[in-house]
Image (cartoon, rainbow, N blue to C red; front, side, top):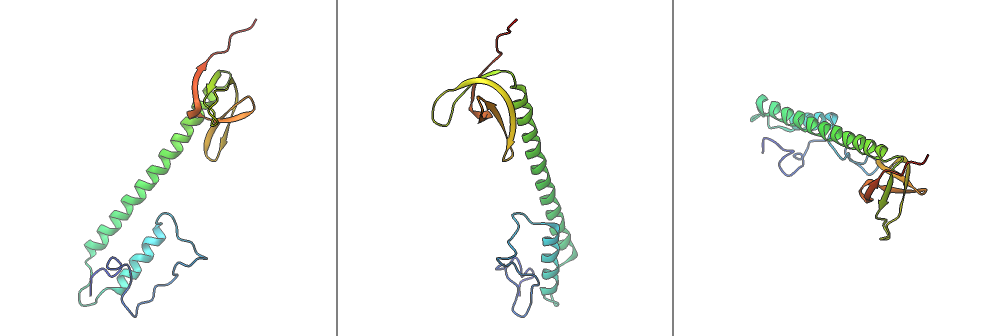
Length: 147
């Protein structure tokens, strides 16, 4: 019997029951949570061979790997938030400026940026009443000063 029944073939040995199996009503997470890890750890401990138990150092190594994964996921989330914040700041810097854009239909409309709006987590600039992505900006100019 393998010392890590979950890693071997991804299932538990016959006779072991895992509580809370994933069903269609309980959709899986896109990332593992600490609760998921603890459930796996308990299942792994209860399914191990009593004559050949897994060492404490193996469990500690798994916990360290999970901690590193959590840190990595947290860093990725923070970087995404920072990127969104920078997009908003860049878009805000365009308010009151003339821009030339590359529209999705291939035309190159121009106009004054009158606002910024977050749509689906991305900053969109408002030009001539339409929303455009920041990557559609081809040119930026300061409007002439009128007296």
